[in-house]
Image (cartoon, rainbow, N blue to C red):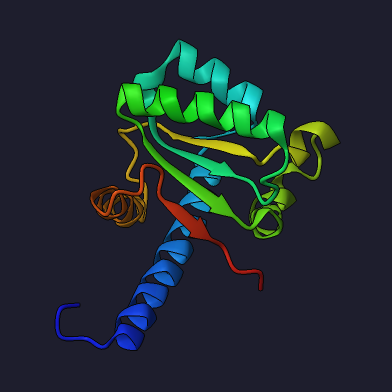
Length: 156
């Protein structure tokens, strides 16, 4: 980035975010197929309490910054993940997550289907495709003093 103009630097950062966004999408879909994805704030909190060592990534998704209750849940989950060394990523783009993950939940009850605000990728033994790319992005973001890395998923 050192020899780039601000426009080039921004463009490559945008490309990087897009690439990591695609990696995250692929990771979540694959984890869901492998039954290594816990969806829902309550379900995630139960798993984090019972078996935090089995969690490799926590994804917090929210487009509504005004939802105070959701922000409190996020703060508690973020704190727990930071204390236990779990990689955490905040994303906006709930609609895109519903497109990706909703089809598999169509036969489950609507309440569970609707809670994509927190997702945990589990099973560190599994060969999670693209986990390294997402994890590296999170580490780099933290080095840039972004306590919880953020990502925007694009609707398609």
